[in-house]
Length: 265
Image 1 (tube, helix red, strand yellow):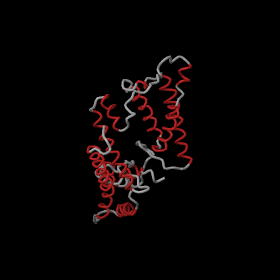
Image 2: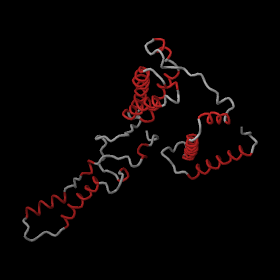
Image 3: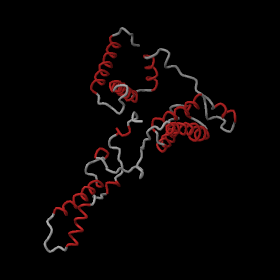
Image 4: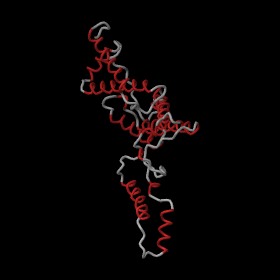
């Protein structure tokens, strides 16, 4: 175990501190700017360190990881009593015993997720995938074994649904900015700005530029002396009328995530 005055402990703290200082000064700014971008660059540095730690733990044995937790706190690494949620699924006592702190955790957790994501479709996808993840990880965490009604009624269509509904209702009540994480026909840009396109050579806006160029070229060409006055009048009206292109039909593609910045309420 590391001692606070050992060389290994001091060296580890110095290495982590040096990385956080470098990240705070050199990392690019993200979407969040309040209270200051420096704070969020520091948080990003902590997140990178946490990611590196998780990758390192993937190649370790479970018992070694539990023993390694004692370096953080000597009280860690001890087995905790596990509560079974998958026994006697036809008994009402099992349903009553399932009403514990995890019910509140599901409700308030999805309420906060709704305040952050603000999209009902994506919230539903994440809710179903979360339950699928619990079923897939039963062999690691025994308390993930639950009755079928616990997964469906209490979690997906119960606490998760109520939390999402209340969170989205709060967003509408306080007129918070709505986020669109999916492609929708209602998301139409009148100008199809360059920053919202995945590539300047996309087919939709390339056709729009070609439609803009063709009328201008036709209007600048010298008229033939043999052309009739009706054709000249029609060409003049065409050049004087505003160009109607397919830009109005360009769908907004979130190429720049700054349009989803949460501080723009």
